[in-house]
Structures are given as C-alpha cells and as structure tokens.
Picture 1 (cartoon, helix red, strand yellow):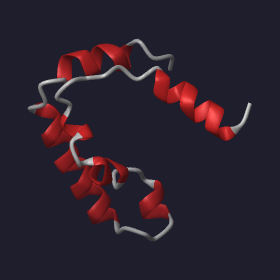
Picture 2 (picture 1 turned 180 degrees about the vertical axis):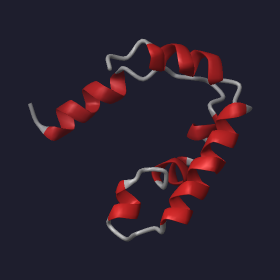
Picture 3 (picture 1 turned 135 degrees about the vertical axis):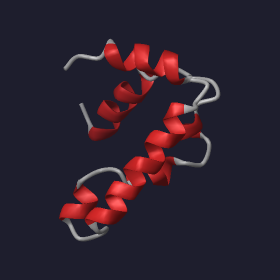
Picture 4 (picture 1 turned 30 degrees about the vertical axis):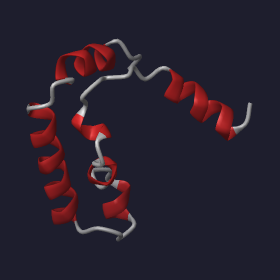
Length: 77
C-alpha cells in the first residue's frame, strides 16, 4: 500500500459534516495547532497556543459539532 492509498483510506472515512467551520477556508488555522510546528521552530509556543484557542472557539459554535463529536468518539484510541 502506498502513502497515497493510506491517505485515501483515511480520508474516505471522514463524514461530510455539512457546515463544518473547519472546512471553510480554515485548514491553516487547524494546521497551526499541531505541536510539531512549535518543536521545529516554525511557530512560537504562543502562536501554537493562540491557534488552538482560535480553533476551539470556531468548534464551539460550529453547526457540525455534534456529528463531529459522534464521529470522533467512534474512532479507535
């Protein structure tokens, strides 16, 4: 299985989540929440923390929050 096959398989399992705020031009915000950006020096700890705060604020009022939580809770640990 190639990396692309693996990625396709992972993406195929994501539900549509209509109206999800993270899918409307906000991918860069959620990408900045990954700690790797801080560890590699791409972003400061403050910038990562700010991105996490902003991403959570978006999620709190998202119309797709409940189906997203349901999907996430069904994923294996």
